[in-house]
Image (tube, rainbow, N blue to C red; front, side, top):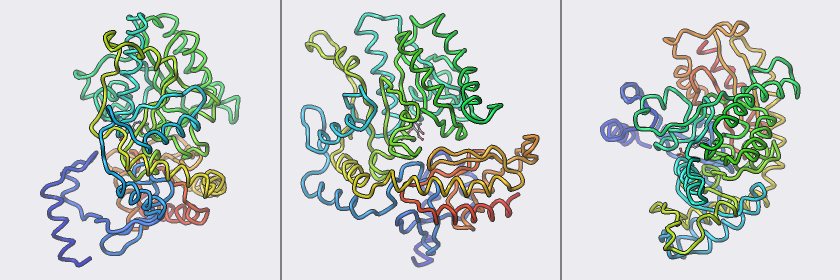
Length: 452
Ligand code: PLP
């Protein structure tokens, strides 16, 4: 791109655009990366520089950017029809996708409600659970439970069940009350392997048992990010916790809501993170990878039991009065169907296992570097924490802004990184190869040397 055109675009960007999760004063002072092209795992800027998309464009992309089969699905759908409303009308992409999602998600999730992003999928889950209890006459069950460090989106319902102080505490006066529970964090395990996992799970489950013992009659649902709390700091949690939570929710009549907006569609090495614990939730939220990260779309799946509580004569006023303009967008549904076909044709999950093993090996090298602690991995997601003194877990002084420095240095080394505070992570697309992973790790090592 010509330098003059680039500079003019960047000037307009500063003049007119307010970017998400961005302190715009910092942004105004920086030179910016203007994207011109994206292909496979790579993103290219207007100067022709190439970067690894190590965070899959905010945890969305699966098969790489610009996949020809996805582009074809978009073209074909647009040739037939574009957006139409999904209330009172229906269409093949929406119907077929719903059937396939019911078939591939954990058993018992039989109904699919569409919306258009992760936060709205969570709003739907909360309202659906709340209304269910009202309609079956258990009207005291109105409260929700969430985990410390959880992130379920930025709309107000999702923020009410959010556990990240930095993003959520300011909005408290606008939120509904929900119970916060301690999150099981595998970094706290004193023993390696199943024994340590059981201990961490049990310490957190004790608190759930106490709460359910006291107040189950007031509780509608418990929302979790299964196996992996993303935005809260890439906190990995034991399968035993999810299994214990499933048992407690069933015993006390509380909906288990699995927010797989980020973990769904193979990112953790299995199609859905719930499969690591072999459990089925009552409600499941999916987005991001649903369309291979290409189009905005989300779904909230639920059991027949929940659906049936809404199914009645109109006069009984049990309708679920919820919907968005872009509910079930046909182009997005067609892309999601194309993505599911790719999973079969390209044996995506099988191929990913090879990359996951290569990632484990590469992380072994990173773990030996100074300042690095608590290297962890689940499938194609990996993270580690940076400390001034890693052995004593003594943090860097906040004014060093390690995360921001890593982000900047990443560009110099051809990496798009988005550290969470002093935690550096990868959230790799399923198309990443073992060579990509080794190259990304080597570049990361250089980033660490530049910054620390
Ligand atoms: N739930 C989880 C677990 C997420 O990680 C996110 C986003 O990162 C959301 C919900 C919100 O999704 P969206 O940003 O599409 O609203």
